Image (cartoon, rainbow, N blue to C red; front, side, top):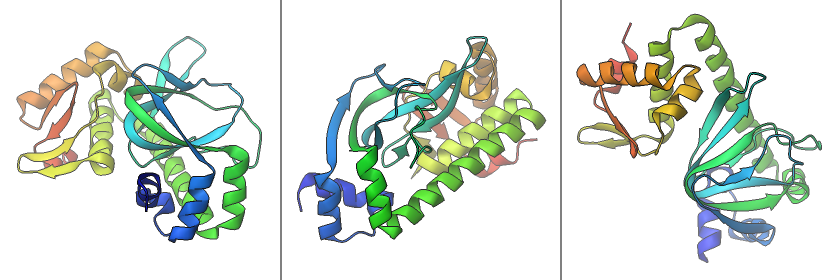
Length: 226
């Protein structure tokens, strides 16, 4: 099996396909590379494709009426995006920007829709992904309503650890090159407020954070902060 087929077969959405089916996916897949700060697409662009992350980290964000940026989600290796709009021709709902050089596998939307019709296993996995993303956004909205800045930021860090964290001898390490401004855009606050909360968490020896990632020394203790 060649490298592209191997990579596709390791992606969660395609992991249960056999070699012939993976070959069919490869036949409709192209590869694009992006460097840091490039946009894959802008909010409002005509929808043309579905993207699967081979390497790199990206962020999806929207701009509100007052010009404020709201980061909707971080996108890492193995994930697909966008998460909405299949079988319709609405524009992309958000802008996606590269925050770590990325290689993306790209399937045109028409080909992907045909794949969903032909492969119920893939369609079911897509539905599960969409359901998980909807629940994630609902929880984010609830956090905005009921939690202060510190607890919103802690929840973002916990989610990052659960989705992309790797166990190490020192704790759980999340290798995502995210800035304080990115975190502020996710939480809905200022960069200065995020810096203050991170400093407090560092003083309590709960986390260590820099531009390469976040180390959570004790994830369970972080979850229990009141």
